[in-house]
Structures are given as structure tokens and as C-alpha cells.
Image (cartoon, one colour):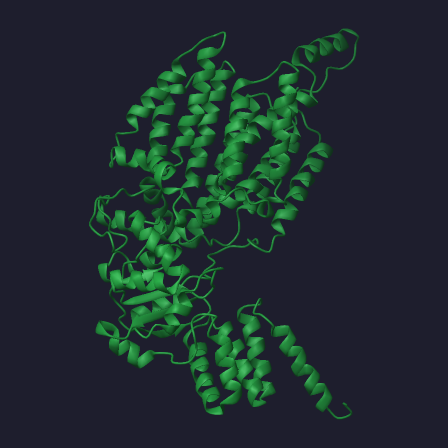
Length: 606
């Protein structure tokens, strides 16, 4: 009798929709701009760059282009579909990854609705790494590697030779290829120690290691992850990057990571206690748990690996041994009872309950304010309008920027030498440059030393200042630079002397600061000086007109209006600030103050 497929179709459809929904939120990752800029350059030049052409301090020096294959594949998705193409990339790569993981888990003996729910939970953890990054491609490669290796362990077809080209592709796609080699090494060691010894995985590992050097950059591409591990990871700049820090439990308190991590360890120990321990699983659990705890960026790979093993272990706990189940079934048939349902049969009620569970486990993570569910690109925090000013007014020369804006500058201005960033999203440059970069944000002497060494023509910085970041305030006080553009996202400065002198003279802000330190002194001065207040108001009006991202300027101009007693104008400006940026500070308090004043002055008011 054929199995009823309808319940499974319902459950798998709901699970696929949950997985796709989990990775559907506005793309805010700064790396995507450099991926697109490099992919565009490669497609236009029909070549791979072998020199540094993305930043100006080390321009022309020999360099490796990381993740070049991923960028080559990503560019057509953007060229054809734009933002929709990027969304489609995320959906397709995520669904393919979890489909292969589901098939792998089933080959390992996992079954039932719990496996489907576990995959949905794993997708919630993967969500943080689902930006349009190389990991979205290498996740498929990791899933395929597990499929090939587990099929071999289960006594099915041995496709280990296919791991050689798979790992070669991984080397070209991302520095995480070391995980692919590590997984193969774990399985190879197990195969060489088991009762049915086989050295085919070890041979595949050796072949893949040799073939890895057959790439456009030779040993330089292979050496990249080891260069970071041995020399770069302790540099101040890399230590400051959030995703390279230890796992952040605040970001993972709703997605199931703590439960999955604790559960996998318990299941491994239970297997050992029952003398059904799996050497491969034990080592994989130890390695990937340590990686996830040590770095936030590895939690996604952890979830992919853990899902298949936990699904198998849960199925084993929930089901009697297969031989006992088969014997019980034969006994029932001999006694005239109808045969038991096949192991993977599913009733509509079970399917509906499991589908509801898939949705319910997602709700806490989906309800996060950030990243909120949605489509498109989140451009908040990027120097969008500042770059428009750069283009419109011919700002050129040696730039200084934060590293996470480097990709966006490349996207906007291409590889034009007179508008290249100082540093890009890969923190390109020498260790000395990276150390000087960090020092520039920490103190005024640090900035002055860096400027003396490089004589910057223009500087673009984010308005949001991290703790300890005083560079905006240093530039506000630096007589060598003029503020020529400010909005919520960025402040643009140009050197008063030299090629940018005319831009500085025509567009300089003389009162409104770029940093936070100058706001309180300006406010106190405006309270005393009506002429200064009027001039400040004029500059704030200009800032509002210069960018749609003008909540800060509107909020400050509302304060000027309050000092002038123009309460209706202040209310209008505060509402405008809240419209542009709902999190603008102290809007509600000031609106309440205005409302209380209006009430007290109304007829019949006190």
C-alpha cells in the first residue's frame, strides 16, 4: 500500500516557508558592496586582479583577491535582478543547503517530524550568517560534503572522489575552506581506524590538498586563513570586530542555540553511556562547539553540522531498535493484527502539529526588532548622500574612511584611484597601517600622526560614534579640515588647503559639529547669543535640505525653535525627526512639554 504523501508535503512546505522567512530581512551587511564591486570589475575586465587596486595606501602591490569565485557568481544575480536577485540568492542557497542536510540526516537514520523541526531551528541560528556572503555558497558545499561522507559510512555508494573538486571550489569561494578539510580529516581518521579499514577518504584528503594549490593565486590563496590565525587575529583592529568575538548569547537567546548546543553534548554522552558512541560525532561536536563558543561568526556552521547529528540521535532515542521493531511487526502479523505503519508514515494530525511547531519556534526570533522581517537593502548608516556630495562637487584625492564603509565607497566610485578608500572591508594593508588606523580613532595625537603620514584630502566618517571614538571631535577641532556635509549617517570633511580649497570655502559648516562633543557647548552658546542661534538655525536648515536622512538636524533645529519660543515650529520639526528616525532621543519628552504648555495657555487652562 502506497504511503500517504499529502501530510509530508504539508509539513515540508511549511518548514521550507519558515526557513525562507528566517532569512528574509533587509540586507545591511557592509561586505555585500565590496562583493558586488569586485564581481563587477572582474566581469568587466574579464580577468582577476593580482595587485592591490581596492585601497590607495598599498595600491599596486601584489595581492590576493579573496572569495573571487563567489563574487563572480554573485554579480550576475545582481546584474539580472538587482535587489530581487540578491534575495533570490539567499533563498535558493539556504533552501538547497537545508534540503541536502535533510536528506543527509535521513540517510543517517533520522526520521519523523522532529527532524523537520530541528532543521527549522538550525535555520534560525543560520539566520545571522545568511547575508549575501561567501558562507551562503560554502554552506551548500559543507552540506554536500556531509552527504557524501555519511552515504559512504552508511554503506551506500562511495563518492569520496567528488570531494576533491568540491574542496577545490571551496578554496576559491571562501577562507572557510579549512572547515571542509577538517571535516574530511575527521572522517578519514575514522575510516582508517574502523573494523572495515579504508583509506579512500585519506587519499581524497591528500588529493584535495594538492589540487588546492592549482588556483589563480597559488599558495597565496591557500595561506590566507593561516595568515589570519597566526599573525592577524591579535591585532587591535581585528580584536575590535564584533563577529570575531566570543559567542554573543544576547543575539542567540531566542533562536535555540543554547538548547541545541547543550542538547548535542548530552546526546553524545548518552550515546557513549549506551555503548553506541560515534567517534565522528564526538569529534565533530567537540570541534564545532569550540569554534562556535570562540567566535560568533562560526555559530552558523555549527548549526548546520549539529542539525544532522542531533536529528539522528533524537530519532534513535525516540524509536526502538530497528531489529526489535521488525520482530515485533512480524509477531503482530502472525497474530492477525494489521501491519504497523511504515517508519516514515505521517498522519494529517501529526503533520499539522509539527507544522504548527515549526512556526511557533520561529516566532521569538522573528519578533526581534533587528533584524526585522522584510525585504530590500537597509542603507541606514552608509554614506549615501555624502557620496552624492562627493560626486556633485568633485571631491577627490586621498580619502580616509572606516573599514566597513570601504566596500560602499568602491561600489559608488569603482576602482578610480583618486576616490579609492583608505581601507576596505577586508582591512587591507600592512599591520602598521591597521595599527595607525585604530590609533586615529582613539586619540587626537593618533589622528594627527596618521594625517601627517598620508596628507588626506577628504575624510568621510559615520555619525554614530562608538565608545572611545573621538575622531569626529578631533576633526571638528582640526583647523586643517572643513565640514562640508553632515546628515544622520555620515560627516564629510575636506582639507582647507590644496585641491579641495574651493569646496571647503564654499560649503564649510562653521557652527554645526560632526561629532557629539561640540553639541553641548554650541547649545549653551545659542542660549546666550541670538545672532549665533540664528546662524546655527540656518546651517541646520541647510543640513535638512541636503539629505533625506536629517533627523539629527531636525531635532537640533527644534531646540533652536524652542529657544526662540516658536513652539509650533518645534513641534513640526520633532515630528519630522521622529518620522525620519523613530529612535531620535528625547522627542517624546519635548513633545509632551510643548503639549503641556499649549494646554496651560488654552482657554480655561491654568
